[in-house]
Length: 116
Image 1 (cartoon, rainbow, N blue to C red):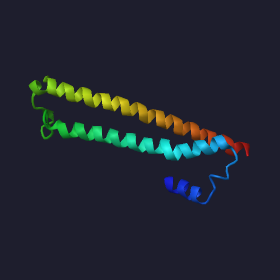
Image 2 (image 1 turned 90 degrees about the vertical axis):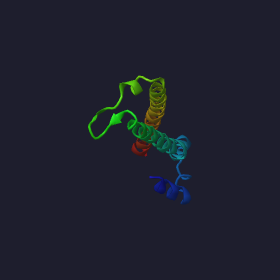
Image 3 (image 1 turned 120 degrees about the horizontal axis):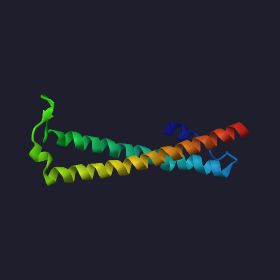
Image 4 (image 1 turned 30 degrees about the horizontal axis):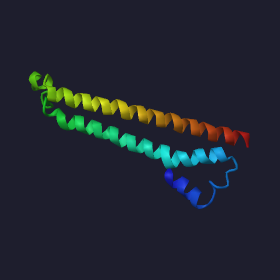
């Protein structure tokens, strides 16, 4: 995706867009929103990895059952879960906001193409 944008930028095609607002939105799409979407997605993947990493402390995968209720009720476990839940909520929200903005910009591009 970014390769096409980079080629267009190098060839001066982005600069030839007459609608300055649309030109800015396209540049912002690739230079900001797309990168943020990838970054936030990687963070969410990391949260899933952290959950997976700590799962063996309380869950027996082979027998598909909990190892210890005491561990699950411990302050340490609750702190980990609250931390991961907070990160998940935060980065899910940021990812959803980036997707909304990307869709808005795509709609602007579609409108411009229909009108020209």
